[in-house]
Image (cartoon, rainbow, N blue to C red; front, side, top):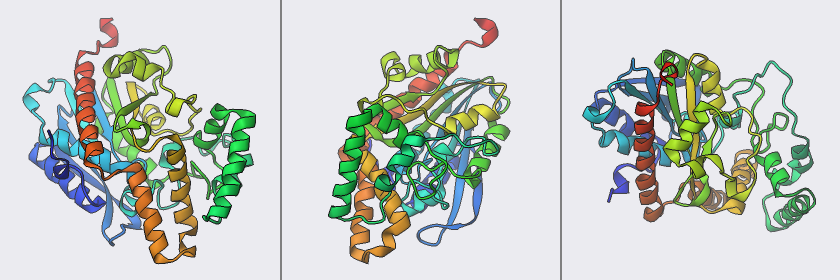
Length: 371
């Protein structure tokens, strides 16, 4: 059994130090990208740290990302660190490299928020911002209830009743699509995708293009938390339906888990601006398989509430006293990164198995001209 305290960290700064140390110990190529203006919760510099191990020139590359949604990064960071610690380069396929992107959203990771310094959901930011934004009319109907100015029992009762009425009238699938699909109008709202590419967006494109732009076949694991059964993985396969890439990920992660996934039992939203979509757009010569892997925490109602609570703390947390704000923030952190050692052991156990299965599948993935 793995000792989770060796891999999980108490802060972004400690996680970053552990990651950099393990990349160096593994003989990997280590680089960093410093945020030009934001600082961490402790005044520390904020960086996206990148490690590249194995055959960096190989035609098969795995991209593994942590902290797209800031405070969810503790689990993904722990998996990157644990995998590096136990890495045996001798058994890694000679044509495979692994690109580890640690702390993609360093501001959110350090400050304990899902969003960037600009309040943007980075996993909705990879759209063509020069084009007219994708409309989300149902979200407009819900905005004042999903992002209220007050966070007390009376306000929550009013908002919960309005949301429940919408779900009853339109159905849970329509509600979840409005909530999670992405919206580009309300800057203080849920899953706001931004008005322009975020700094993290531009850096990711730069990192991926320069590091794995040569690869013919690319696997992607973007680690998240919040969806699924407590401590267990939930797969979101973002390859085009019926495509080679979709089929590959289904083989690696288990056919049923990777093809029939319904987040919290609801239809998958029409997600806009995903990191995965950004990677696809900057690797036009590659076949890209994979997507997001979540680890379940408190369930669907609590998961939706945590996203709303994060926004309220970012936008209106100054309205309450320090003790109340601290309690709300501690609850938010535990909602998406539980301190329970059982949860963390399960994350490590399942996550390392997924990484190894993905690497095995990537190594066996037939090149297009071999099919």
